[in-house]
Image (tube, rainbow, N blue to C red):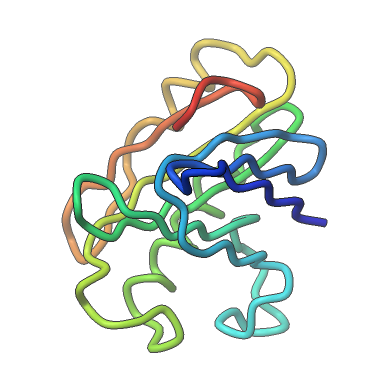
Length: 140
């Protein structure tokens, strides 16, 4: 279940998903990918959330995977979400041109695993930055 609590001024919203609280700046839309029609029923890899936000006046997707401890599938799941956001008409026009991979975790992870998550994501052939954040961290 996705609990959303927007700030009074709309500048940020606190999301709770799988016991992970995230504070997102500039939120517009949250999509739970387990229930999203953009992914085929038999699609094995999909992120947990696609969050659309406004950052510096531009629209941006935060393709989000939430885990207790990050595993080897996390990067593939986020990449699958980036691919859908870039290709599916369900996710709007090309004006939504930027994406960020967001890996949120509840427990400590090994440094080598965290470093592996930060690289290798791409959208339309361009590198996509990745954020690795502990649940409950400051506003993203």
